[in-house]
Amino acid sequence: NALIANHNGTRGAYINNCQLSGSDCTGLGAVTITGTTPNEFIDNGSDGLRILAGGAITLTNLIASENVWAGIKVENDYTNVNANVTLNANYVPPVGTFTNTVYKNSQVGIKIESNGAISVDKVIAEENVSYGMLLQNYLASSAKPVLVKNSDALKTLASGSGIYIQSKGVVTLNNTAAYQNTSHGLYVDNTSGSAGVIVTAAASKNFSDNSK
Image 1: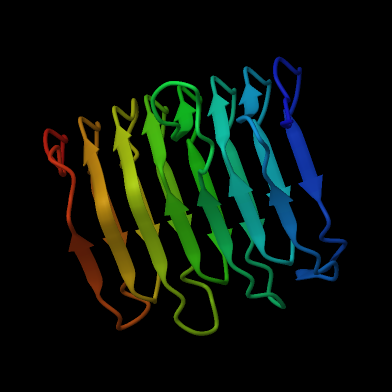
Image 2: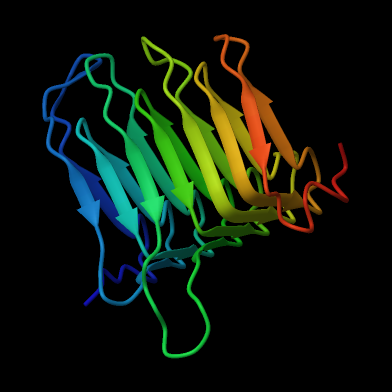
C-alpha cells in the first residue's frame, strides 16, 4: 500500500497537525509516511507534499516530481518544538534499487525547516528549478545535527545550490554528491554555531562541474 496524490489542481497532500497559536504549534503529534510501495506526489498545482507538525516527522519511500511548487516541504521549526525530521528509503523493488526521487519541481526539490536533527538518506534531487535540497535547523535553541548520506543533487535549473544547509550543529555528508548545478553544488552556512562540517566517503562524482 502507498499514499498516491497525483495530478491535483493544488497541493498533492497536505498534512497539518499543528493547531497554530501565534508562533506556537500546540499539536505535538508525530507524522509518519511509509508504505510497501513508493508514495507518489506527482504533477500537482502547488506543493507535492507539505507537512506542518510539532512532533517527529518520518518519511519513507517518496517520489515527488513535476510539481508547480516544492516537491516536499516540511515545517516543524515552531518556537515551542524541537522534534527531528527523517527521510529515508527501504523499499526493495523487483529489479534494481529504490531511491527517494525529487525531480523537475518548479521550486525546491526538498525543503526541511526544523528545530531538531535532520537526517536525509537515499535521495536523488534532479532538475529542480531552485535548490535540490534546502535543509535548515539553524534557528534551533541548541545545536542540532544535519546528516545527508547516499544522496545526489544535480542539475538545478536556476540560482539555487544542489544542497544548501543552514545549521549551528554538526553537518555530515556521507557518500553524497552534488554536481552540474547552476550555482554551488554544496553550500553550508554554519556561522550561527561553532560545530564543524564532515565529508566522508564521497561518491565518485563528488562536487564537480558546478557553476560556483
